[in-house]
Amino acid sequence: MVCTTFVRPRGGRVAPRPNRPGTGRRSPSPRRPGGAGRPPARQALLVALLVVATATACGDGDEGRRFATDPLPSGERPTAAPVPTRVAPTPVVVPPRVSPEALLMSRGAPVLLYVRSGPELWTVDPATRDARRLSSPDAEIRAYAPSPSGDRVAVLLASKADRDGAETVSLRVLTADGQEVHREDGLEAAFGDGATEARARSITWSPRDDRLLVTFATGGLLAVPLDGAPVLLVDPARAPAPAGAAWSPAGDAVAYLAPNGSGERSILHVARAGAPPVDPVPLPSSTGGEDRSITGLAWLPDGGGILFAETAAPGSPATGGDLFAIAPGGQDLRLIASTGFAAPVAEIGTFAPSADGRAVAYTVLLPTSGGGEEALTFHGLWVRPLDGGPAHELVVAPGSSVTDLWWTAAGLVVRTAPDGSASGDAGPFALDLFAGGVEPTRIHAFAPTEATPAASPISSPGASPVASPVAP
Image (tube, rainbow, N blue to C red; front, top):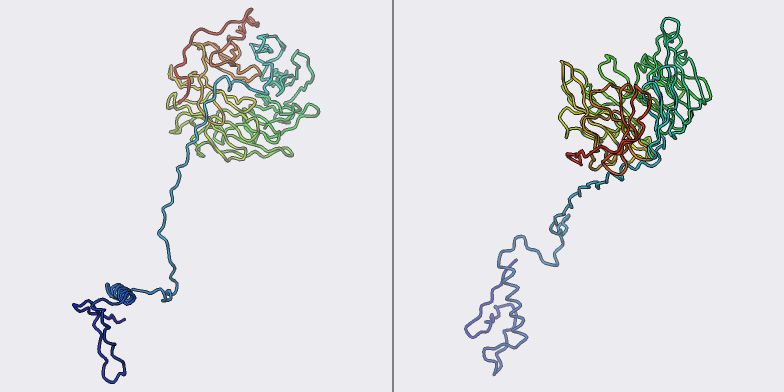
């Protein structure tokens, strides 16, 4: 590109160039009179535009410049400057705080409560505080379980047979007024050659109230229908010394605890319903390793998960234990309640989800040592929402320990025993109801030595302040 420079003389006009010889170009006409030093307006405008264009074209050189009429290079597209995208922070969803009064209202729970006091079985109505003796059998009550509706109770009785001191196991189903409606004797015969060694351990109902599940300390799970013969559901080899066996709310699976091969820790198993004997599948612990042992289980009311508590396996470096939920297939493991706020080595004691699936009540235990032996002592009682949120500590009378939990239509009922008293059903205990808040109402106090409840209900215990109403 060639730049042309116009030289303006002193008179303000652009000096015309003469015709070059031989070009045939005409010389510009002489100026007309009266136009001294000032070109016409149109000429002045053209000159100004030409000067500006020339200056623009030659100011910085020709390299890299392009005119509007020039084609774009191949592949080149006009681009806009990138605009940074602002990412909104993910909001932290904090579960709302649910009052203890709302958590303690368990919809769908049974009205009556069944408890054992010494050798006798009692029914209790928490709403009216009415306690009645249901039966006083002549054999040992090995286990009992109320039906899901609460209108019946199944009792597992064990007695010594004449031959070789073997145990005979019988099952009785009673109505709430003590009438026997079903009886099954000789349950040990379902094990064939191992009948002389079978020892009954626990019993539980199916969700439809039509069959029962009996476990034996010597191994095996026995399904007992109310309209048929007992069937060995899981043989002793697959379920050695099972504990805590329970039907799923849908009735399509059974969960139970059984020791591992070395017997040093318990593992959670789930057996899907099918043609017996069924093949159980072990579920992982919270860590998936061998440093944890499962201490208890309970199905969630919708059947979509299983609650389980764990502790450190013997000889492992792990300490303490928490409450978890896991799907029946072994996935979706989640923490429900931690015991770390109490002590680094605390663990879950007894626990129970509410019938409507909104809450879970549980106790926290602490290890203590005395006389060279380590034991677990009661630390506190808590209730919390199952879908997340803070927990509430419930008041327990000083010098007492909570040993059992039941959800009823009236609220949460707990069984408390004096610290240091006889364990199990042999010592004195009381039933407390939590319904209107963290303070309990005493329903009845039992004295098994007399085999009769206290003549008059005892009022709620005196002031017992809660150190921290909400668990960390």
